[in-house]
Length: 211
Image (tube, rainbow, N blue to C red):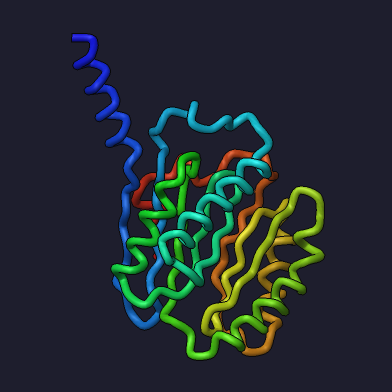
């Protein structure tokens, strides 16, 4: 009887930990998706009282390694307070969905926000704009308690990170708008201290789905 109860408990926990996916249609502009990865999983899987920066670096590295091992190249991964951001070009919906499943499988990740784009027609230009954007964001990102990153895909800049004030957030987004050739800026910058809980943690499934 005790063995049956233990097996049932494992099945319940496994089912609760499965990511819930809701996605918009794949079109010329790609699609984005927010995933509640293991909101209900046992918190013993990660020590949430530890330094978030260390946890984030570990999660980031594991996601990147897992994607690379499975042949999913060209995607950018950043993690802040166990909230991951997966962005980059995707040839089709099936490829993107597989990348989401792989990234979501990393234990300790609480939430995953994704933004996919059609493959760029000029990757060299994207790399150059990304380099200029990263350089422009360096001053903001170097401030204590702040981490900001920027990447460019087909003329669209995706800015992610944690900052301490609305002023710093506006400055980070402004840096992206100032770079020639960037026609749109996706804002994934949150105002929060590094050890603050994710302000989206109490959001409902419907609220987490990107438009």
